[in-house]
Amino acid sequence: HVISRCIEKRLLLKKSIVKKIFLVIVKKAQERYDFELNYYCIMDNHFHMIIRIVYNGDSLDKIMQYIKSNFARMYNKYTCRTGPFWNERYKTKIIEKYSNPEKYLLNTLLYLTINPVKANNVTSPFYYKYSSFLYYINNKVKLIVKITLHPFFLKLGKSIKECTNCFIDLFNYYKEKYIAHNWKLIYDFNYRN
Figure 1 (tube, rainbow, N blue to C red):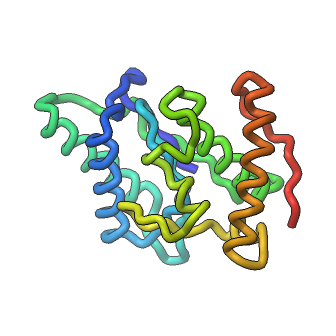
Figure 2: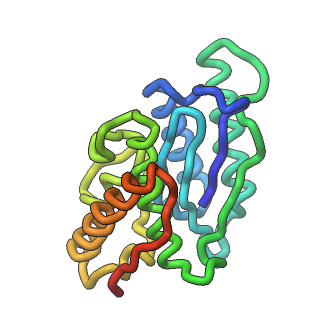
């Protein structure tokens, strides 16, 4: 799970065109480097991506340096500005290192799904264009980037449809718990294997 913020937490990613440019840069990274993009959510002042490094693939450092430096260059050119775009290098949370990585991944997916709603960007994640949530609900949805469904997601059922239905059930449960806890991140649901 990769996270990076704009400098001074400014809303530099707010415009739709800027988010689209970011996704185009990610797509170029996918063409250049060997990795799996499992999920993304681009907010107005930061982004989240769930990336899996494949065996003998490129390092996360290389991938992120390409994405962040090329995007910053494009953004500065587009807006006629100079200076740094990003607040920090980037932060990572390695999902597989948690005691229950499957549960951690699903909680992260659910949190990222509700994030645009929490930020008052949309009333439902079904309306948010800058997240791969809709691909997890319907993998026929066309996105700028290629999404690979995470193997832990695929354990939710025997078919993609079962996985999707389970994920929707989890989302509905999570949404109610999340709202009831005043938008605080929770890690208390149990999912079926």
